[in-house]
Image (cartoon, rainbow, N blue to C red; front, side, top):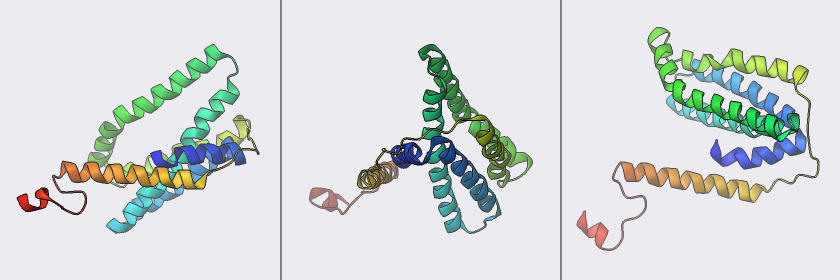
Amino acid sequence: MAGFLVAMGVLGDRIGKRLLMVIGAILFAAVSIAAALTTIPELMIVWRAILGLAAAMMVPATIGLIFVLFADAKRRGVAIGVWAGGISAGVALGPLLSGLLLEAFGWQATFLVAVPIMALVAIAAPLLVPEHRDPSARIDLFSALLLVAGLLAIIYGIKRFAAQEPAGPSIGRWSRAR
């Protein structure tokens, strides 16, 4: 998700923040249903990656809409605080609620819980939120791909380090120590 935030922010400027948020919500709901129905591990990895892309569509769109909707700096600050508080609460409570859902309903429920919320966003946003776009915004696709590749390399290296495995080819004295 993190690797696509910048590109999706620019895409939201280009096509419209509300439209991107609605597309992200619909995609997130559809893929959540697909993930709940999946029994193939490799396909689950694909669904999780697409969920990250859908989330990357919604995050910059929501923060961008806050800047459009709240011109007054004090109200904008409160709105950003509420937004950040909601994200923080989700991060803090997500594992606990997921555990409860797992115990009560099974792993599929951890995906299906988002579907009604995303449906509400997809239906209510066009009715309640004004559209905002900047047609002059330019997407730097190379930089976005470079950011994703860099983040994936860092994550891969951290995971390999945590497993105490070399991240690349063993050379020099380190290879002789093994």
